[in-house]
Image 1 (cartoon, one colour):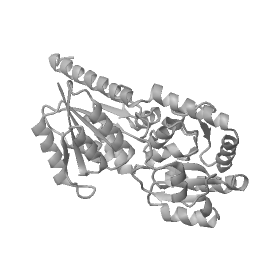
Image 2 (tube, rainbow, N blue to C red):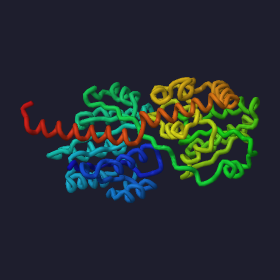
Image 3 (cartoon, rainbow, N blue to C red):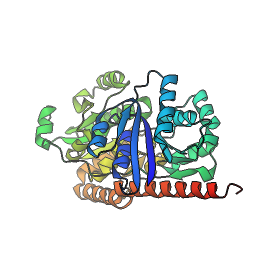
Image 4 (spheres, rainbow, N blue to C red):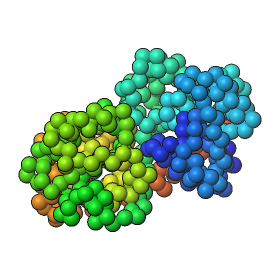
Length: 377
């Protein structure tokens, strides 16, 4: 039995938290004894874990630097004596490597990075470099993430890629007609969606410009912006300035956001950088045509003109042109959507993601056992 401790900053309703809740819930119970620690707070995925009888502990971290929290994690590792500690995202990744300093025996330490973290400041990158010796393996969710951390200094032999897993979101509780009525839209409206955080790197202004262009030839379209974030007020003002507000709905955070993807016609994403977009994968799993920024992580999911369309993130004209083509050609829209759904089933299932992690954990434990049996090697 492999004892696994998963450490994550929160259990909020976000992409990384969802992936690790799926992982903790899906690992074989006859082989893995799994428990989860959230550094700061719980959230929707705490309920999911408890429903799957995965033990969860919330530590209530205060602020960016909380030495008490660091000691709590150290004590939890000492008391539970896991074979492997697996963490996710910068706060947890740095915490577990600092918490195990001087610890003997030290558990196998695996960190997971979920994005091409160009946002990291100098001190964060320097800390990542300093903690490389405390890292047995770094797992990225895309080749782009792996390359980013290889350039940061992680040696090739410590790097792995395990893509996100996706399942078809649950069916919505409301019909398409009810959704259109909720937003005051006529029955013939074609719905385009963006789902994610409203942050600068998401390139949402390009989508608003795209709607300004699209509505001139297809005035029956509307863009649903699912999610919230620091840029919401600025984006709402930009929509007014572009006189496109009647064709845009800022939906905000909704727990049923993924299920609403069943009701849309197209999905847009203009991110400047990503790890591997959960919302993009969910839209594809729902069989929806996608038009997305041509960045390396998106290229790992979308094959141009086969499972979607790749365009320059700032190419607002491209979003409008490809959308018009799909709206006016139902057969092409159906072909693209079906191919996208098939690709998600074949290559990016949750079962495959869990299986890949399980295999990695087995290999790391076997390698550690072999190393302890042959200390001179």
